[in-house]
Image (cartoon, rainbow, N blue to C red; front, side, top):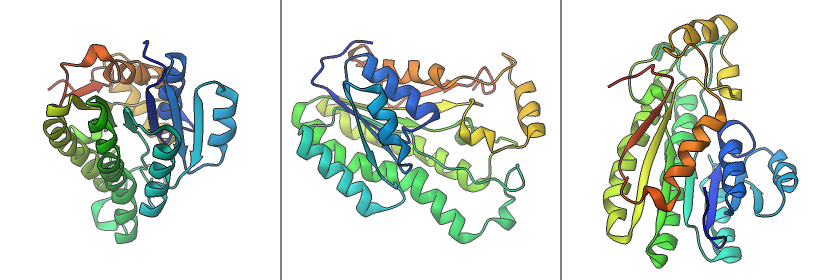
Length: 250
């Protein structure tokens, strides 16, 4: 992927896993990349990447923190061309899913805040910056669990990831007149801290359910994100890219 160096991307959940792989791909492609994460480690990680990598600690469950982060992006760069809403949480119960009857309402609200409200707020704040330049790319990371029933997806996680897809379609429709595209990636099982939270038995069973017979790597998601963030994807919007080894074939 190549891009004009003046383009600026913002990636949430960028300290590890899919978010880090995407940030690395963007930096390698010549894009100034602001890496956000609630872990303070994101600062050292960005420093190691050097060059075009920037960072900020941001808890995306906190609306004030999101607004502060976006103000700083505008202050420093006066633009946000690419937004990747990747940060997400999926609480586990004894290494497995939470039954609906047992999900604490506070946990439901936390998952909703991180997985769905935060992407809404980032889009709301980034869209005016994109409209200024009549160009933008929004890439939202959903999940196989938002596409179809999954034996490992809890209700709050599935609901937010399905909501992400519906939200993305509206963002695509509203952004189209200004050459702003919005698309979703729906990963299947990927080697990450989130999937590591499942028990070995659950992970093994899930791997057996994948037609390609394995978990994916974060870099395989990053390659799709790089395409969706590029000029080459200009006629792709409102789409969902299932990157899951064949576990969901609509």
